[in-house]
Length: 110
Image (spheres, rainbow, N blue to C red):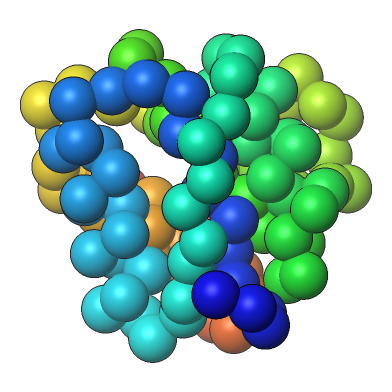
């Protein structure tokens, strides 16, 4: 996929986190590009944000889901969530990534 998209870098996980985050982005009408990555969720989220055409990145590893912006310090993501067994929160992370792109108010995490 080319064009504007939130970059979603994935290092590891069971697929549930990826599915939920993507669903949140899709529900808000913002495309994402999933890219295999190596590293921890914070680092790959920052890299995703720095390389995304819309300057919003998400990183997923087996333990964390992070939402990052290139304007933030590399080790301080905007949102950091456990990546396991909290589908509603992971979907809300996807919603919030999309809302950053659209300039809409963020949702509170359940």
